[in-house]
Length: 337
Ligand code: TYM
Image (cartoon, rainbow, N blue to C red; front, top):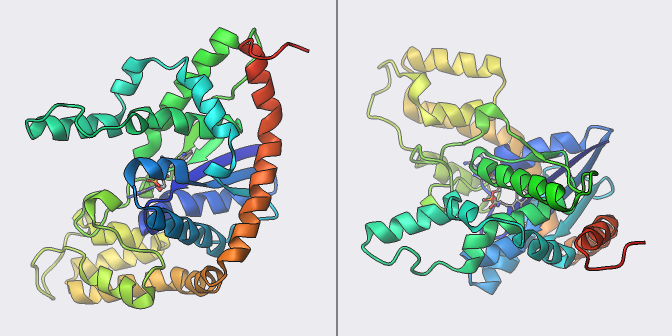
C-alpha cells in the first residue's frame, strides 16, 4: 500500500491555500483503496510562531473540523495531534544528532528571519528561537516516524521535504547497516495550485495577511474577502488579460478546464471585475457550501473531535513503536535482540 502523510500548523484558521495545496489532494489520496494515510495537526510547530495558548487551541479545533468536513474518514485515516505522539519528539532528538548545522543555516524560514533582522540593522539572530532554527528537523521527525512514500504539500514546503530526505539518507548511511531504516519521502505537489495567490497576488499566507478563509465567518466572510481581491482598474467592456490575473488563478483552482477556458474568454471580451468576482464566489460556494455545513455541525462538538483525536493518537503511537525501537537499537541505545 501507498503511505501518505501530511500536517497543518495550528497557528491560524485554514485558508484556501491550505485547502488546495494540502487538504484536498490528501483527501483524494485517502480515498484510493490502497492508501494508508496519516494526517495530523502540527501543534508543536505552532509554538514556534505563536505564544497565545487560546489561539493554538482554537486553531487546532478549526483545523480538525476542517479535515473532517473536507471528507477525512477517521476509520480509514490515522488522524491525530502531533503533541499526543511523544515518539515524534524522541525521534526529533535522534535526528538532531545527525543533522548538520550548516544545512539548517540554509533553511528558508530561518534565512528569511535573519534577512529581515539584517535589513533592520539588527543582530541577524535577534528574536530567533532554537525552535525556529530546528523547525525542519521536527518536520523530518513527523514524517520519518511513519515512513510515508508521499507527502502532499504546497510548494513552500518542498525545501523541508528535501531536507527530510537528506536527513533520512544520512541516517540510513550511518546506522542502517545495509538495510534502510527510513524511506525517502516524496513531496506530492499539485502543479497548478502549488502556490495559490492571496488577495494581493503574493502567495496566500497567514504572515502576509492576505488569506481567504475557507469556512470561518461563513459565506459572508468569503464574499467580503473576494471583494478585496486586488484587480487592475480596467472598466467593464475593456478587454482583460486573464493570463496575468491572480483572480483567474483562484478561479482555476476550483473550476474544470472548460469552465476556466470559458471564464478567460469572457474576460478577454470585457467581463467586468465585479461580475468576475461574483462568478468566483459562486464557483467557490459550489464546493465550499456543503463542506461548511458539515464544518459548522462538527465545530459545535469539540468533545467528539477530541475523542477521535485520542483514538488516532493511539493508532499513530502503535504504528510508530516498532520503527522507533529499531532506530534506538541501531544507535546503541537499547540492546539488539
Ligand atoms: P502550513 O500550516 O503553513 O500549511 C499547511 C499546508 O498548506 C500548504 N499551503 C499552501 N499551498 C498552496 N498555496 C498556498 N498559498 C499555501 N499556503 C499553505 C502548505 O504548503 C502546507 O502543505 N511545516 C508545515 C506543517 C507540517 C508538515 C509536517 C507538513 C509540519 N510537519 C509534515 C507535511 C509533513 C507548515 O507549516 O504548513
